[in-house]
Amino acid sequence: MEKFVIHGGKELSGKVSISGAKNSALALMPATLLNSASNQIFNVPEVNDIFTMKKLLEQLGVVSDFKENKILLDTSNVSSQVAPYELVKKMRASIYVLGPLLAKYGYAKVSMPGGCAWGPRPINLHLEAMKKLGAEIELEEGYIIARSKKLIGTKIHFDIPSVGATGNTLMAATLAKGITLITNAAIEPEITQLSEFLVSMGAKINGIGTNILEIEGVDTLNGATITNISDRIEAGTILCAAAITKSNIKIEYPFFEHIEAIITKLEDAGCKILIDNDLIDINAKNISLKSIDVTTAVYPGFPTDMQAQWIALMSLAEGSCTVTDTIYLDRFAHVPELIRLGADIEIKNNSAVVRGKNQLKGAKVMSTDLRASASLVLAGLAAQGTTEVLRIYHLDRGYQKIENKLRSLGADIERVKTDEF
Ligand code: EPU
Picture (spheres, rainbow, N blue to C red):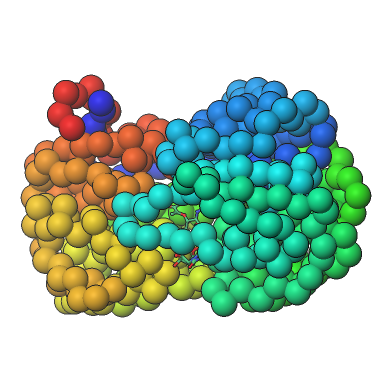
């Protein structure tokens, strides 16, 4: 096992580049199952969820090569349509193989993802959409078994604009017969990027970037190449690292429009932010950080994946605020750990009431999920004394060696081996 040892209180300075987006790459990679060809994706982060998706695709017969943030995926010899429990239980995004396998091979057997660290995360919308496209779905021994001779285009309205269900349905519809209309589709940048990748394979999609997607099915798709977008959550996390340490840093991140909500909330909290082409300069030197309420929402709202980091930041702000998560009602496992560092936070239903303190004090804390780990690292950077963050394998699922980025900015953070669990 590994842990981070952080000696807090160091001011940060300098510039870092933001890595490729994990959640976008996790959709682009299985999309290649829709063709039988060679595909390339650039700017893919070297994080454990990507390694899990690579392993899953290899298990299906995809030949892959992943070096220097570029992944080659050759789908010419796919030989299995089974996504086993051993891989799916590691990562829920494995469900993304369902739509492509079903559409291309008429069959998919995918382990049901179980619960996750913050409660149930159903996949009913994915399954209902596949059924509407004409698939027969059975659940057997913990597996979803989906069959269809040929998917048939239809109208699908999502009651919730789910990112995963939109992605899965979009992929399936590209090879369905006729036209599929998805209304109340998710409009997250990851879905826009996926649509563009599918179009470059030869898919016919109208309404890209909007919540109404019209897909005209085609018979086959070609191999394609794409450069992945950068990770908006990593960008937001590093900006919060500057804010919580009252520092002035720059991030190289060419997609500022993807993080407008985060930038605006940081400005409301008192940070000065300048955007110059691909560079975002955040200056939090000598500011008194203000408490700012946040309610998470689907894009372009404030992302749930930044909720934990925002709570960490607000635990050192003046006054008090309420942080409400409307996407996941129970995603607060970081709160008891932040309280161990001296934060004053109370959970009321799906909200955290955060009363800012003048300082946090280092302690041992435990990661419980990816974004919770990020919030503990942020708190540790600002806390007095030494913070040890255990179970950082959660963090390694989605941040490419964040300690190197933070160290290059002047943080005192080290990854060390440990027997502690
Ligand atoms: N939902 C349903 N039924 C479904 C699908 C979703 O009720 O069939 C509900 C969920 O329970 C949730 C809401 O709809 O309340 C939104 O879930 P969504 O399907 O949009 O999430 P996802 O596709 O499973 C992706 C990201 C998550 C991120 C969410 C929300 C990937 C691989 N994962 O998950 O990322 O939190 O969108 O933005 O893209 C993370 O990176 O830390 C992470 C958890």
